[in-house]
Length: 471
Image: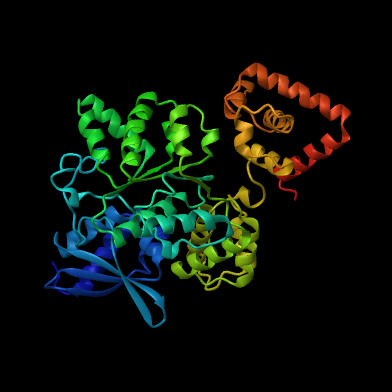
């Protein structure tokens, strides 16, 4: 093996080149430059242009980097990145998950196992909270659409013993930042109260763990573990729908935690009133504390999020591009991040130092129909109809027979039949778990009103224009 670290790095580069296509090599590996290697600590440092490079390399080429560096630097090598923030500044970033990185690995375990179940009582300090520390309040940008849940979340984090907001039920469409917010709450609690047992997990993982405990006859251990948590955070609780045994077990865990003053934080993609297949006794408990809606970001917030993301990824972009994206991409924070990543990747491939409006429009028009029009779904139809008619969405999903609510409910079914390929039976399930006959009756009623009421025709036209993205 060659002794010169720079020559070893060149050998690594040749190895990488032989295992990826030429465009990938030129785009992602050539800009990665050797910085230093410490023979005593075995730390290899490389320079990369931005945080985006670090995240992309870790996500797509981690195993390849692992093999190449082991091959030429030895199996005790540790990789660190120096991310260029400006012409004269860098920030050190260690690889997150690669096994050749110096970090506390902890005891390996099955990813589906309840973390720390076996030592929940004897070694409570060893609980892995499963939190993403990168999702914190510092990078959760405040705006009108998220002000209430953000401020309540900070209050809970600073005063976890209070019961005013217990449980905290955060709901909103996918991609608006629910997972980021609950991780920020958990992370802040751990910073201020390190002794607190905080646990974050998805509803799906909870269900998998429960099923596994039934299979191994360890349900009591499973329940005892969760009843030992101080702050329990369950993401995407709508996935409990129709899982009766899982719901029953969670019901008892919920009762124990709430009765003993432990904080419960839940997220869902919809209001509790719109959760089909959920036991009524659970829905009642979800409403005990505070229900806070996390809405789609308003344009001002979208601009702030874009500016932050662009700075983080080191992208040079003109202000008119930010305005263009903020005005046209209004679905979610996740979509905004995807747009920035797309522009950054293409600016690298096409060697664009500054992303101008013409370049941005050309890139974003390819494979992004959402820039021109949003897809029409039942949820979106209900959202637009409720907004237009000033009716709450949870009432449409519910059992109310008030005339204005029934009208919006029936109109939603009519538009779903017109603009989607779903069957009437499926539409009924999605609009409050109604049956096929109810949907057929609703469609006939709407068709009749369209023939006799000019005002109703105008209402329907306004909703259809919104659905088609014409206003």
